[in-house]
Image (cartoon, rainbow, N blue to C red):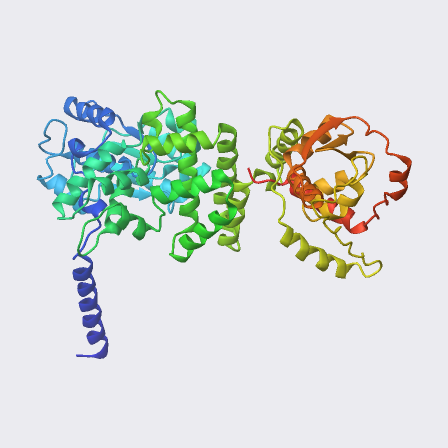
Length: 568
């Protein structure tokens, strides 16, 4: 045998071997594709009408099937093509045993042709189809053209198709399918019978998954079937593909196995992450996200689960009575009520907006992890957003601080302030500030005179015991003065706003501790709005004026931002 002959034999053997290998396993959505109208799930309003038309022989020359992916458009088109050519239809269903049905199903009958408009969208292809359609079928009763994704046709191709749709021969039938009805011209739609395929209910998808799992000897739990039905978003083909992906050699297919296979967090972890976001715990949220990312969870899926939960919470708050059917059903009522009480509707709307923007930008992101982390940080603190919502959040926070309904920020501890001050002192090489020593405490029996101005002596000691935002206020003599009289110490302030700010801070506690160390007595601190009474002349001479420290102004300027950017 010559060399070319041997190559041909080897090529034929390789092709046959590939056919044997590929025929070993078939995807579940292809293996369990419905063969009759009665087997189609969730589209009874369409299948009943088509069966009745086939039984009565009142068929249209053109059909337009619309709907989302995986809802049965192409499947019903193939069933209808067999039914109109079946030699012995059974109540409008094809028998799937006659020569016409078996030939159409195997693809050997060339009178029934399935086209993909995405790859045959030119006007030349449609003209060739139009010229061929006038010939009578050779093996069946009707020549049927199934055009999938018909919205992909160009405008000239639609114009070429329009004439034959308007006046077709009696042996011709067109079945058009599309997922984007708005792209189909009105002139095409008006010449077709239009059937809208709706999303399949999760309960019907769940039942079908359990039926397929039983036929395949798969240990699919009811919880796992419910989760797959929710993830499929109304598409039975997607649900079967997900089940095919989650099949394992041994063991049951439950929620945790599905979460691990598909790279999802899980309902419990999603609820916990959203609870941390509601508390404003940015550090905890980033730690949890880092753990999910390290475990191999997909970034887009994580944000998608958070978005789905936020959407369910918004529906739960808006339609608490009749909105149960609108929920995905993945969370119990206790979890929904707990999260709903912690997140108002305005916050949920902001979160949904941020999550949608982040998900849309992941496709063009250079670093998906960084974008997701920035999104989570903005969810924890709305004031970090650079948009309108961030400005509104900061204004709302300022209004709360002024009215007293929002507590002031937690003060820094003394240790961190002592560490920060030397670092900033090193930066100020022109005029390094000189440290001021705290006054030495007096023994208990050495009681200070009642009219002495101890306030000026206390100011240096209070500097490291109260937040810098409070110290900037109390060191100004025009705003705050202190007078000790007996066992009572009075803060004389210039306005009620100053009084409200100091009352909520650490000033009272720090002042009482300092006075106890100086006098050995428990001193009661009170506030009074107005000017402090004048001191005796001798006390005024002894009272030193506190030195102005430029470092205090710098720290106070930074403290303004701590007061504005507050974790809710």
